[in-house]
Length: 108
Image (cartoon, rainbow, N blue to C red; front, side):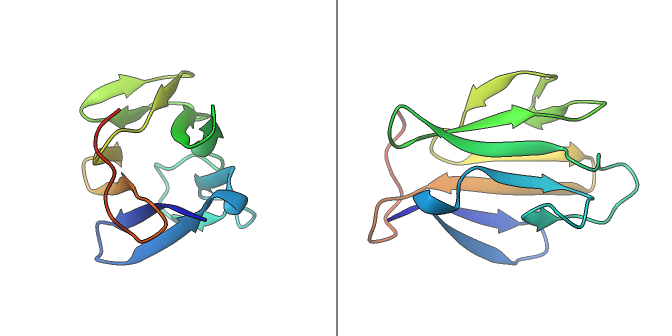
């Protein structure tokens, strides 16, 4: 079942299914989404499901992750309708929860 679309700032887009979560983002070659920038932690953050279809982001980094302009350091936060996730001024992505047909879900 498709549950999200991840749009990277370079225009690349990834469709994510519930069976692909948890999904790791970071500099390590073993991450699901690899961002090879020196300011990205090897395992920077993780997207996971909580209570069915709610997508959460867990910060695993040294310096924190920003979600909708709020720094989350070592925290887990829910991903809402169009959550902007940034790692530094020039590196970000958008996580968009969707239904099976790809329609954007309303905020929870």
